[in-house]
Length: 279
Ligand SMILES: C[S@@+](CC[C@H](N)C(=O)[O-])C[C@H]1O[C@@H](n2cnc3c(N)ncnc32)[C@H](O)[C@@H]1O
Image (tube, rainbow, N blue to C red; front, side, top):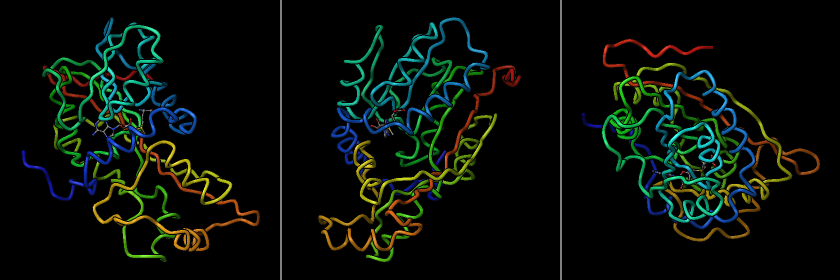
């Protein structure tokens, strides 16, 4: 099925995604506090999932392997898959038991059809270009009745930073985040059954705009949009972003909005019975 152009997002270049996460790999865990917290929530969703004995699990966008290691403790056969080789090297150096790692793009999975019981993905989907292609690949590799559990960020994410940059120039400085409705559409078009899709908005306080920018850089979350500026950003522009950032507090503290989307969906079982979630 051809992809809907509206669902092909603005990630310009996968090599940029690979390079920026690669550079961040060694220091990633120091910065990724929010990512681990969201990962723990997603892992919590699995307690009620009816997985078979020694399930085959694919951790898509596994990063330094925080979630991969916890999935491995569930008597599972786990493969961590990431586009950035340095992330996999770091994950391997921290692994406790033997885990398979594959360096690949989640939109082109080098994985056999009908072979996976659970695809798990914490905060990777927002880096994909073509949601329909991604969900199509997930549907292909899942066994009938298999599950996909994922988290991603929605369009409200970093809205203050986007507003601040808009006052400085016309370039795109903050990545595009697909809406819940776009995600649902791509998922259903791929033939997956939507089990649940939750969206929640949280606001996180930072010591200032520079602290927020340092965290984004620390986790490798660079601007990879098509309309990003191609030159280095000068100090004067950064000062204008800081001045133009909404919700600045007395001591220079700021808040940043994150719209978290948590989803569970399944591939229809061969007999068309739906997966039953306990709880
Ligand atoms: C924000 S990190 C999350 C890492 C990990 N899941 C965690 O919870 O800490 C996003 C990860 O997705 C990977 N990634 C981005 N785009 C990808 C793609 N198209 N295919 C596979 N991995 C991708 C990045 O290299 C990075 O390791």
